[in-house]
Image 1 (spheres, rainbow, N blue to C red):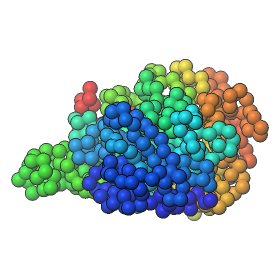
Image 2: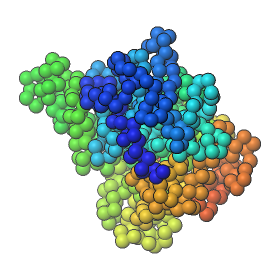
Image 3: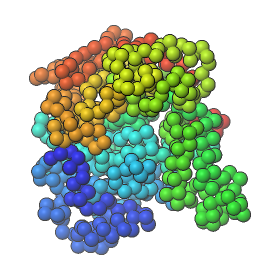
Image 4: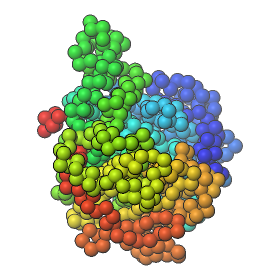
Length: 623
């Protein structure tokens, strides 16, 4: 079955998106009640038949504290054609709405049973990005298991996916685990696959004085931690082994996972696979003053100004009337969710903030107590095995194609970078990344400019190295120096069929290969459907490495040796061999991870200038 067809069929076969728990989900709740005969998550009285459509509905029972020992039955859907049971839209935290907005995730209060047969709503985001309806009530996860797997029949390794999307987009359902799950079953390495959601944008990653003073930064990261804690407590009921959890993710998801390493005592996973993202995040981001400016701009566009009072006509009247105060923070907390989202979108459309990453992880004095770059250098991180890799042309997805002059390129860098770079630094940067098409990204394309200015390739090279390659190398080097010997790295180099040449091997293009969708006639939403047999073979090889890591904490398997036609993947050792695996259909080979070493050293030698330190607001808010 085509991946795109499967994705589109899921909502149809399983009904409408899962009901939100708040009042905004009334219509969805009604459709769920009409479409199913099992008891709903809200505890409404219905006639439970144990079936979904024409198939026997699988059930598991969990025992959260809120159930007072009685247990909560979760009903999913069986897909006999794939021999899998799927549980969609399982709540793992209380709805982050009303008084829970801008608060850490709270325990979900379960009633009787949960119907987990429909894709959950995505977290609020730009509606042009979402493929499913969105809601502020969005802390759900999806679970894929081999048919019949439960606490009595299985005890399998668990793979938990954290999606990307620049901390402002993405969802769990897009990353359908069907083919990954099937690959594990076919090769006698079945796993439990979990995909979780976390709050996005201003709802989960806000910046500025209001967020700092109220401890409301990094809430999306807290959601991810909460989801992993839920897995520890409950995955056994689905046939999973809580001591064998591997967390993996891409881009923002990868960055979030890497930030979990800054908790030296974390014990919710035993290994991680990080695709395109490391702790020292977004080095070309906005300045602290820009964050506060953006926060004040958010207050303005939502009519929640700092100088607000109940008699001030500029204040959002609904919010003021509801809380009886003119406090700007309370106004944001009580603003209708859609209005707050529109405020976020207005901030992102402002030319002053559009180029930067206004919403994302930040130093908060708690989850992220100090500069990730500094914490890594001090060895203050969890010593957990990991794989961390990048794609060959990470920067092309972030650079506008209209860049056509050095002046414009420098202006873009000025928008991205945290502090005004001195002339000497800029001069060195241009010398390291000359306006020479043969040296730019997409790399390895010679003097080809794809009808664009050569400046495009220059800036794409800078962005990719500063944001992804340099930070990955710093994490690897510090991990090796501070006692983690089980580290592997890769470079994905497989072009995507049908994609314009100027994008190269772009950011995110490895995802269909990891999920088994890079096959003729299948494809992945928004990327491609023109994959070849060779692409499918590379996908098989990558899934083999990923599953081995989930099972054995080693991509080579239990004996740490190549099996069959697989290429042996040696560990990365900063003091001896900087081994990396090249992932390309006709060239899965080991090479030394020393390309553009001078350039990445340049960024890693200047963590302050290139924003490896990123505080939530002014430092005195948390020091």
